[in-house]
Length: 81
Image (cartoon, rainbow, N blue to C red; front, side, top):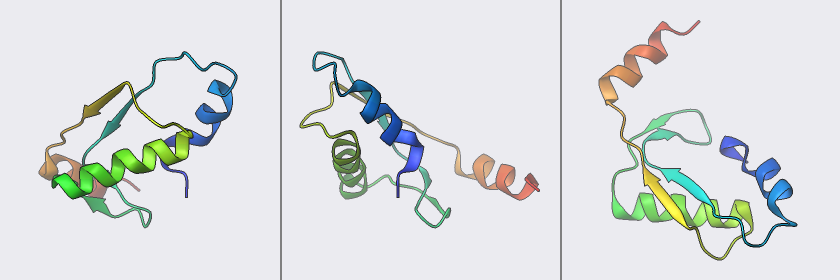
């Protein structure tokens, strides 16, 4: 499954080898749309490796660590229809 729309980005960047790639890792939804903390080194490493695989790259120039307030995210999810 392609979370975050990386496939179109991969296709668009393919002809441009010198593009700087920035991505993000951290808390979010898994493949089953369940909220995950993603705060352990193993979980973050997995997310980086998945970004590399989905983007077809051997490196990422910049990786941002996102942080969400868990209570706010869960509250917002309950408010969605």
